[in-house]
Image (tube, rainbow, N blue to C red; front, side, top):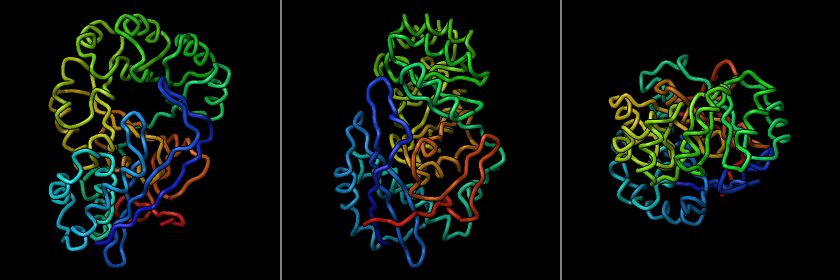
Length: 340
């Protein structure tokens, strides 16, 4: 097998702002694993919060080039076990590699991933569409620009409740709130009361990731369910979230790919935690992989490619009614004009 690395800059339709950063361009690395005349594709974006850069991604992936050349692929799960030790400090790179191997394996087997996993693609929850932090009029404009049944509203300002109250005037759609660690316990509990009245379904990661003491109080007193994101990075975090959160949001780059994500889903379900898989701001390469997992989920956030100005790949087509999978095996991705 041969590895090829393709770097792209993803341009967003609008400046995307959360409580800790704003971006207009999202650098991403597409990993292509080629064997014979078949290729599989995976993706990892850069991320300043987790200190991930394109250089780090490339350097980490280059170290397995020789080992990969002589590797005989049996299953993606065995591959992950064999290669994970090389990626202890870079789960984002491991994710891209694992995703590419799943795609390649599906193409070799002549089946889409959901079929290999015995999942029904008709049973997919609707993705939310994310409205990043902006002036209130601009957030209203973004929402009206994309009529949708389910919005994730990014918060973490001095006027959070004013934002939600104003947005509510323009739609009956369900809201989800993501504070990205910007609140404390008192603020979260107080806000939850009002947000429940405003048609909010749940609050995602209101407190800083390691504030477990206050998180217990929030869990017990919040008027809305609380979903872990930054507090749930890898497999060992799932059990820790029990009794502190009502559910978890799994991000493939943070946990190291589809292989550990599937294990995390099983762990969470055994603990009766709600399960969500979320995306970064990424292309349809990463989003298509999430779509194949989505029949297993209670909630899904796979709108990343919907926020982009231009696409670098073809893959799943997400509408307000259903997810349409292309007639291509694996994850179903076709990369446009790869740049080496």
